[in-house]
Image (cartoon, rainbow, N blue to C red; front, top):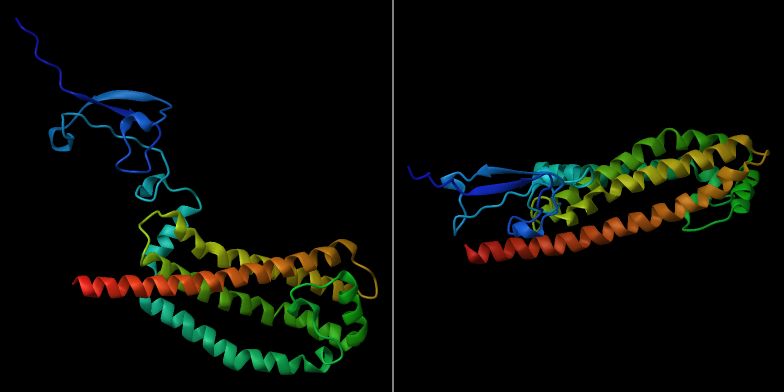
Length: 252
């Protein structure tokens, strides 16, 4: 009695292909198993390959720990959220920042706050601490743990939401370019690290704080450079988003 022909099989790998169009022979399996191909999933020519593990923008299940939150943000943020974040950022900038600047004018008029510049030296921190006096140092430390706790969250949320929304308009799900939306998280972390260092230096003055005084300028420089990169990327994203929207309207 003639044997029935066995159905074609597919090789399932422990790793996934990032690209849906990646050929099966490009996978690097850790463990493989043969299974019959279901007729509705059979590829042209009776062959099919399912690869489960290469990172790529098209495979949500294969996203890394960095890409996954960036992708969720891009898919979840709506236009109204970006507008709300913009309004909150504008309101805080127009109302709260001037009040805070006026409150600190009595000591910053004697010596500018070093952390408002791109780069400074530990000696600049000590010079500011001496020029400000006890009252100025106390006010500075208080501001770092009140105003400067909220302000990074405000501008960080604004950048996080707007970068996610703009870059999602012209990138596919899982694209590595969506990672740029997570850059504001780095900025906020650097800002907090800077605040802790400078506040402790002021609180301990006239005693010296060697390690933190040296770290503070590095955190400040990294913060300003990363913040500038965020706004540059936001500008690029806005331009590309407008281009994509206009192209979509013309095509329709």
